[in-house]
Image (cartoon, rainbow, N blue to C red):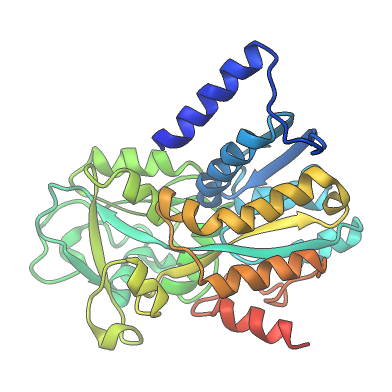
Length: 338
């Protein structure tokens, strides 16, 4: 993070004296780019925006956090130029865009691995099975499963405090699909927030807490949180595994997912938006690592850039929302052969 803070400081100093460095013969870009959406993708988009403004100080970029669902609502109304999304667009959101004549370009930008975290003082839980997580989070657990001892024999008689993303979050959509088996299906009596930092705070301050959040937020707070391995019969030969770049790339971690940006097709006619999106795809690999996410393979970024340059509209996922175990590279490659 320090490198980007230095960049911003230098820009601020240059702005005070009205100085702008422009390459000879290069036309200076200007304008406003409005971005909203996922709190997960926010970390990457914020990093990209800061780097982009280092060479394009006349372009003002605003980045909001309404969650994936809230972002799509604004996007469908034409209020923003692009959004970050931690799941693919849903059919109902696609229909809202069509109704308002908002065509969009869907672009994958990184991989995330939803992290299951507990308090560092928790000395009894090092891994959980998908079935145990489902037992905690399914709708039937509400008012009934309230103690760690109910999850596994040998766990202590301690209250179970659950924290996670709110209903407008793509993280919530994916987590429920992968763990409960149905998107947006869970108990409702947990502490929810669209701000992942609140989940960090809640788990860090309660020995009995367990939460789920984007991997980058764990990386940023690894001294305050303990990472729990996940055991799934369909991954890693049924052995517990923690999220990592290797685990995600080799499809060994059950809670791995792609992250996206969606660009308003009309906005993609503006030079500052074109430059920003191309810069995003060209630098997402290095910056996603910097903020704690997993880069896509180089070929995936090349294909995504090609998709943007051709202005290919619509969803590769067929507007099906959160999906578990879908490979971005295969989808992009298949589309490139059309």
